[in-house]
Length: 125
Image (cartoon, rainbow, N blue to C red; front, top):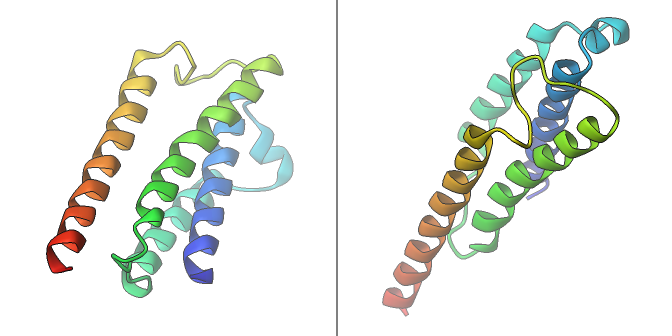
């Protein structure tokens, strides 16, 4: 399970850095981090996750925690960056309907998967 949390932490860190660079352009360059590296790490984490982490259906809570973190943390980062006076270069903001539709869709899909897993577990019992 430590691998699972490490993958989540790396993905959230990369996503947060990309958002920071979007709201305050040039931040990554000042830190000496090439943007392409972050995208490569995200792809590697996805491959690593697929290859090594086998989700256990009895741990259904992870089916809720992962999407909640992957939606909640970026929304929190966007809120903080907006409060600090940043402005998105790619129209990613709290007033963007696409952002809210995507967040709602992601949470809804994860909820459907969670209920299906709960039903399958109930059938087996």
